[in-house]
Length: 208
Image (cartoon, rainbow, N blue to C red; front, side, top):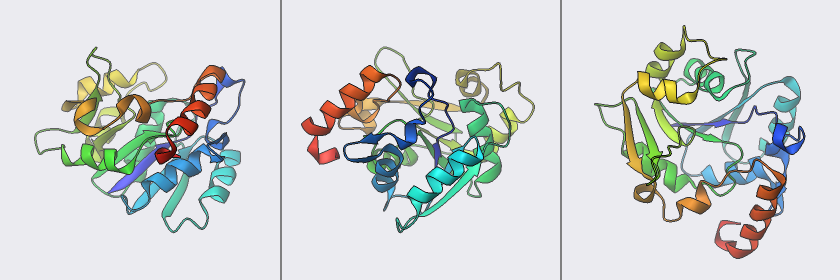
């Protein structure tokens, strides 16, 4: 199965810093993620937004022993839906998993568990927290269902929740797929988040 890493964000809340290149736990965040996925996926597709990001991520991915393709968003719209649409047109396999490039503690084991929960009756498997919050960017999708839903959609004005409502989505508890979802699903958006991650690196050496 193909894993898609969404890495085209502008990092506005971090002052325009390109988050995948941030050094966390002694290495760039995108490298941590790619290493964590090695052994669980045959191929990884990293979706970025411009040529500079392609060059930066490609350099890091070289020599990992993992097939990594770095591709540019098909649309100029910088949004998660644009990344998912690009994935639906780029990935060759019928099913793909997706994660954002700002979740440094996500594990391949968790993504494989999600994949195993996708059945013939559904087009997506999405984790859900006890309070009802969902994680549509840490999920598994059927490529053709995503392509059909998004092919004529106004991607710049829609949220990912719209996609979930327009395909057959199965929701699963975060505890069902992860031993430590609060750690694995933690994402880096602000300077405060960076400080939290640096502390987590020391406290959770098994993930570092």
